[in-house]
Every structure is written in C-alpha cells, then in structure tokens.
Amino acid sequence: MEYKSIWILYICFVSKSVIYASVNQSEIANTNNRLDLKISSLIGRVKQNLQSINIFDQQEKRQTVMLDQQEKRQAVMLEFCSNSNFSNKTMDEHMIYTDKESLLYCYIPKAACTTWKRMFQIFDGKMDLNQVMAVEKNAVHKLHYNNFTTLDAAQKVFREKSYYSFLVSRHPFERLLSAYRNKFLDPYTTHYQKKYGAEILRLYRNDLTEEQYLKGEGVTFREFIKYVISGKPFDKHWRPMTQLCSPCRFKYRYLGKMETLFEDATAILKNAGISQKFLFLSNSRDRYKPISTIDMKSQYMSLKASEIRKLYYMYKDDFLAFGYTIPYYIEELLGTIDNV
Image 1 (cartoon, one colour):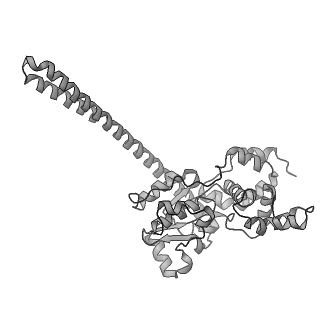
Image 2 (image 1 turned 120 degrees about the vertical axis):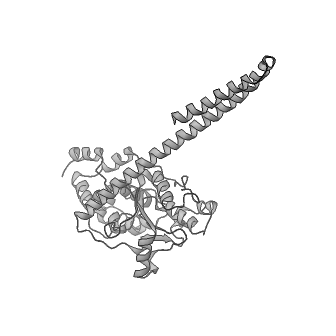
C-alpha cells in the first residue's frame, strides 16, 4: 500500500519539475496557480486510492479471519462425528433448496431461519425485496419452499452433492430462551400457549381455574425447562440442532452461526457465487431485542443446578458438534445455585 502512495507522489513531483522547465519566467506565477490546483487534485485522488486500498486490505483481513474460523468449525464438527455414533437422519422438511441458484439450506428454528427463508423467496424470484419484507414474521413460515419432502432418494443425493450447502446454528441455551420468549412469554400468537402452555401448567400448577389452564398463559422459564427435560417429545423450536440437520450424515460446506450471522451470510453468498446478485437482509430483525447476558442470567438463575446439568446433557451433542461452551455466568450459577 505504501509503495503505491510514494509512486503516485513521485509522479506529481516529476510532472511539476518538467512543466517548470518548459515555461518562461513571466508565466511562472500563473503556472504555479494551475499546478497547485492540479497537484491538489492529484493529492485528492491519492487519498481516495489510499482509502480504497485500506478498505480492500480490511476486507482481505476479514475474509482471512472468516476462512480460519470456518476451518476451525469444520474441524470441531469432524472431531465430534469421529468420536460419536451420531447418525440421525436429516429431517426432510428442514432441507430447503433453490434450483435457480443451486443453494441448499438446513434451517434451524430460532437461528435466523426467518431471515434466510425470506432470502430463498428472493432467490427463487417469487418476491422482490419490498414484497418479502412486507410479509409478517409468522406468515414467512407459511410460504412455499422447495424441500426434500417431495424428492426421491436420487434427487436428494444430486442436490446434496451439487449445491452449495449450509446451516446456521445458535448457542443451545440462548436458543432455548429465544424459544421460550417467542412462544410463551411474549408470543405472536396464542397457538403454543394453548398447545403446550396448557399442558405445562397442568403438570406444574394445581391452583388454577380450568379457564386459566386452557389459555396456557403465564408459563415461567423454569416450568418450560422442566417440561423440556422431562422427556416429552420435542417441538422443532427446541429440538436439538443435531437432530434437525444431522451434520454427521451430511457434510455442509459452510457452518454458520447466529453469533456471526452477517459475516457468515456474506461469505455464504460469495462462496455460492451469487454475492453480485443478492445482498443479505441486514434489516430484517423482528420486534424482539437481542438476548443479552442480563437476560440469560436472570432466567437461568431461576433454575436449580441439577436442572441446568440435565439440560446440558440433553443438548450435549449440540454443544460439542458446533463448538459451544457453557457461558461463564452459568458455570458460576452451578456453583451457587441450590443443588436440591
């Protein structure tokens, strides 16, 4: 970057020297003014070039960081698969694809899947940006997507081998809190309250009216977690990620994470060869604020240490496969929460 700057400035100096030698002394004053303007213009262009070079260098550094990060994620996944007998079948409903752009995505609820589903509507040319952003969050999941449920074995294998494949994971404990918030604490609809909330309240409360049980409102985070670890069938919003996308049966070309969503999205579009046609929807956040450390602490503080441990072992495959660890503040809780 520095040698380019020196070379450009040198050209400016030589140009001025040549022009000075070719004019009469009487014209020097006027020439100086013109030269000053030219040199100022050249210096402005030099600065612009330097800024462009600097931006390019920063982009290269980010790409190098993301490449190293991706190699580490793939290595962690490989180690997990090598040391386990994990062989769950991928859930066909979650494998969505676009033949138009040769892209294959295993969506994980509560891990940016709404945003990526919007993108697939754009990839397939079904909607433009303004149209897809006008679709209400819950309605996005009711739109039509091409998935593996309608394909035979050969068609699935063809897309798995030929298309650029990826998934996006999320810290298991944060994903659980997101599911609780979205389905029970402050839901878009009452569906999950009536379907699961009513059952949860009947299991852990004995002082409510029948009307209150039927509504299923007011489920606490601890009651939700107790329900999850009780062995009841999983809903897809809290089913372990490894059970949804089976990353040991099928190797995804890119392992994204909610924690680096936009950087990963940029890399995915570039690697798939479609970054010149599409930009990731960076402004598609829903009405919920990002989950903070304070949110995590306040909710997980309500759990007993034994419940947290049981929860960890239930989602242990997710922790190991995607390289997540128990947050330090939850580890601290394990040392301070009552073990009874």
